[in-house]
Amino acid sequence: MARSGDFVDVRVQRSKTAVLAQTYELLSAGGIGGVSIDEVSRRSGVSKTTIYRHWPSRAALLVEACSTIGSAPPVPDTGSFGGDLVALTETLAEQLRSARWAAVLPSIVDAAEREPELAGLHADLHARLMAPFGVVTERARARGELAEDRGPSDVTAAVAGPLFYRRWFSREPLDAAFVAHVVEDALGHLGV
Image (cartoon, rainbow, N blue to C red; front, side):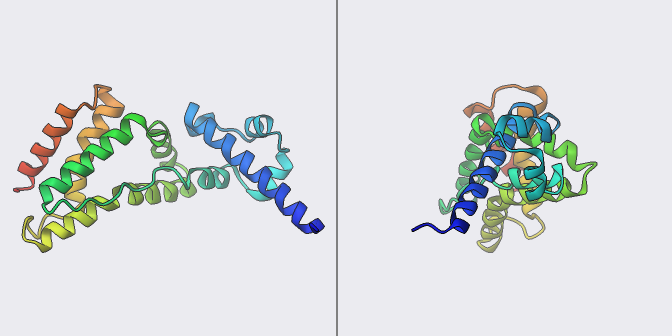
């Protein structure tokens, strides 16, 4: 037999799930600026007072809604730094083409400039998405494939920079030929 506390917990969880789902939908459609508590309440069917009971501010709601954005890609182990870099770059390019977080990230970067809670979210998201580049970089340095003075931030900038530029600024395709050129240029720049 279900206890009354179990029923309340199920309702609370159902409300939270609805609010987070609608917040993420609004984020995906219009970025952080497109999310208001009023609209989340309207779309989710959860009252504003209930939303504020669980999240004391819009920023707190956004942080939780964004906490699942962008899972880190798997860390490849092809046996060489070049092979690992190709695999990671292809995966990142595919995510930038199709993952929902790719549409939301620019508004997170923008909001992080003004809201400390969202700056932390941006830092966490960046660390999660770029972590595999650190792993393959350290592995390559340990195998002697990469100079000791070339760190994860050098590798990440050499690869992510051109991909991000093309995705959000020039809006040119992130096709296989471009990805291959990015890897080739990065390896040359890094002295591999």
